[in-house]
Length: 121
Image (cartoon, rainbow, N blue to C red; front, side, top):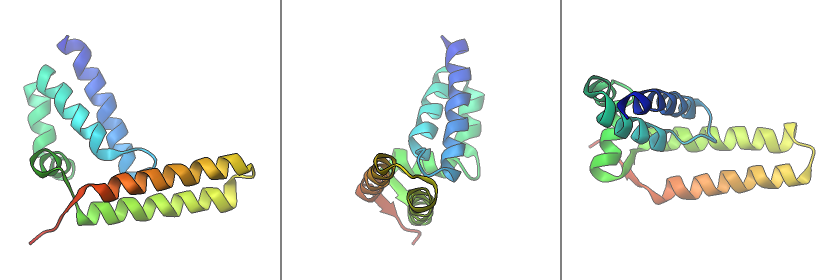
């Protein structure tokens, strides 16, 4: 099974990294899935991910306290709404598409706001 888990882990990692830049893709769940798959398939990949300068804190913070750093939360919400409003007002003509985009943005916002915020003390 480890030969199946490893490529799926890297696919999940790619989606998690894409989620940093694309607000409709969640970053942390994909990184957590990657960590779980790497844990079962490759201790080396698992340690690399946990010790990664940019990606490791997402996993450690969420695993330890189910929290997202304040900076990441603000960035995610800002990009989410910037992209969503751009699509709603400038790209989509159909009312149902605008409504779906708004619903996704509201849903993701509610989810992110429901998570604890980690503040650097």
